[in-house]
Image 1 (cartoon, rainbow, N blue to C red):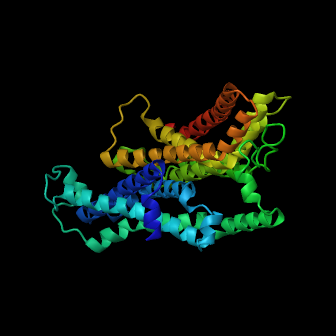
Image 2 (tube, rainbow, N blue to C red):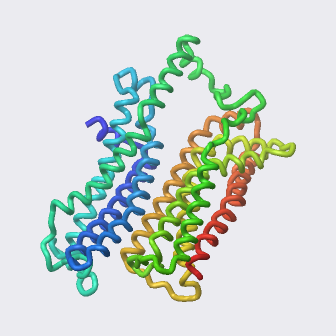
Image 3 (cartoon, helix red, strand yellow):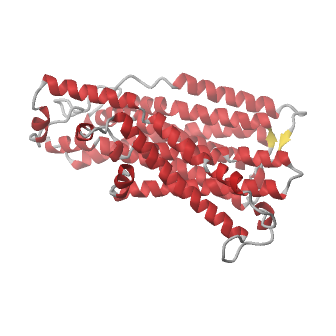
Length: 414
């Protein structure tokens, strides 16, 4: 009940993020139900049905990733001294976050079920006919237990992933640190509240962010995964006798090893994203930087873990899209509606997760920006630093995405 009340009284931006999670869950649930309908309408082709079910793993992973990002940025589930005073410690806040995520995704799954029943003709209205009846199995009764089992996948996985991502370990560490500071300096909360012109902890006396934390350690693993994915894809494309998979919706087919190579390459980009973003920050504040470059570089190094991984996922989606469309260069693409829905879900969730990370970074830097403004820093300096950070990321990630996409598309062109 408390989780429901907090969800109802949240900020409109938080509600918008939860609506995006519900919409992604609805789209993914509809794809899963369409896979069930295809299996019912084509009992003679179980391999094609299994392939369509495996093809839904991409939208499922994208939806769960978005749900975890929204749960992490929800201000109502962050550890706070006032909440801890009434018994809401990190463990209970984690449970509330998991319940809120389950509520959003369950609403989306129910909407998917209603939409699927409507287009099948099981509910009052005008259903689809013709080609749509092939993957909806409108002439056969829908097994409700199977449909509910498929619809429960996204809520269960999303809530479990949110609980793991927001585990009590970090929360207990924050509480221990806050208690230690309170005991070391009695009345620290009052001093903090009565210090409107003071500097936050993340700003030094010079007005610039302190030295960044150690660089993320995912770069070697990311490079290794990208290299392994490209090697697997090249080897699989050169094997003439390997069984080929015909992907649904008119996408480029190929050996199973090619798809495994794509998956490893995407995983490598996601793992290397934070380290690459940190490297961008190091390049910005190198070689005797001025105030603007120093502010942009140090800020980007601190934001590398938050912004790097969603940016790496976006690059992975972009490179995969380019690689899949490479065999159709110069031809007109004609994807099916379900393939288009899956592509929109994956790309939309990746972009929404990146936007959520950007909002989280802006919220985290609000105190630093306010302190710099109080120190007399002009707003043009802050805007220039923000543009410099964005330009540095684009200058590194865009060529990296293009190179990986070209290397991944070469075996398919041959």
